[in-house]
Image (tube, rainbow, N blue to C red; front, side, top):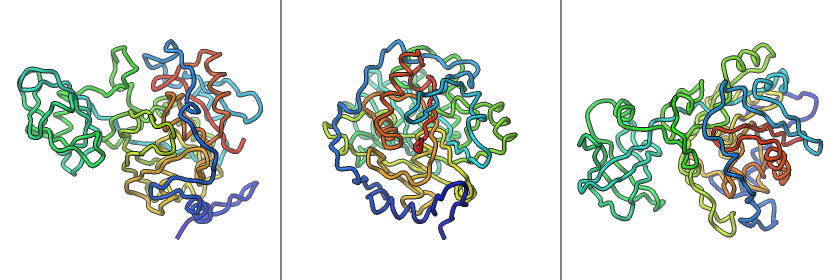
Length: 375
């Protein structure tokens, strides 16, 4: 049975109806929505990002980050994340992605002494021994080859390419708990545009992280603190969790001239039954981060609360569940930016321009926006 939302000041309809509409438009089971027939060009996803605006270190405290509040056709408000509770309303539901980043970057050596690097993306078995991974140098590594740590410990065995073609299955070697092995030899997988050494690895982890497995942080959640959660609770705004294991599409830019032909890599998601019930009862659903959106909308599109998703949200896609989105500022030419356009249309350009004018900090350690698709 599909839960029905309570009727507040305006009719919201049931999740069943909204999910059916999403399916009619082509969303679900990885299909691309085709409601909009307007052509999309790669240049439509571009904007001039000044490298000086790319945040190299996280702000302290976390909730001191700026928050650009979308008000539709009106000028946006300039606030801070610590103000989030007063920007929401009793009856709203805040949904966060509780995935936990693992120290998934391994800097290793080949038997010849040459450098190699492995970025673990997602475990392929319950024991966390087999992983899908990005490897370098991909063209030179041979199936069955061992890669070593600086102290000579064999740590990785290279396997076959995956069906996707751009990743490999690798085996994590050594005795003991795989997570302990990664803690001993791995590094936090910071994005390549961050060049400053991270003094505290926990700053690339949300305060609510729970399920180890991701190769990147759900970065909008990095801003939230116990203080913010406490203030939300006082205002009658509950919090619920989902899990989406952040994978390759976080790292992969869109390169196709027609972005709608971009192939999405699948990611594992889970929406607890309690979260889905809370969504049904919520006045508005406020997703923290694009990964929370993808988990919730995948559940709505497929009718499955857990599984794998290739859901591709872009201009013309139907959004069935999420009303507000708190998200960081994203790289040009990415599927993340395409999701933002699916959410609020092309006014993202005005918001980005406003943020750059006011020296907001961009990307993973940067500031955030609060987007309202109904504004």
